[in-house]
Image 1 (cartoon, rainbow, N blue to C red):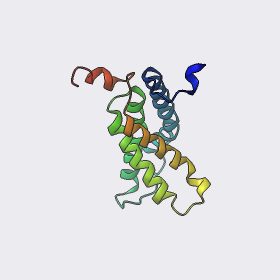
Image 2: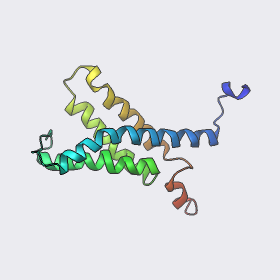
Image 3: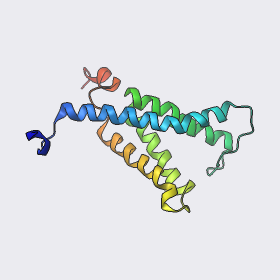
Length: 139
């Protein structure tokens, strides 16, 4: 109980916290990405936002890559900073462009994801990740 009020960084606890955060955010984002993956490969005509002007299929493909592939990479802790940077950009775009004129409540989820991906991009994956396993002898 004495350690509950310390301001010192507890590295093992931080590594477990990063593991929990990575797995949780990956699972949550997959719940958004998997329906888009099914839409991409489904029989129905694709109807998706195209703010870049590159086509709905291309925009949906980029979104599926970010929300599915990058989420899986974050979950296992492989190329974590690059994957979280990709999702950070995706969520910033969703917040600013896609939901730009919406009331705050409609874009709050994109902002929460944006905050978490910013945190992961800054901190990295932590000790309990494939990044750590592959890079521990390189540093």
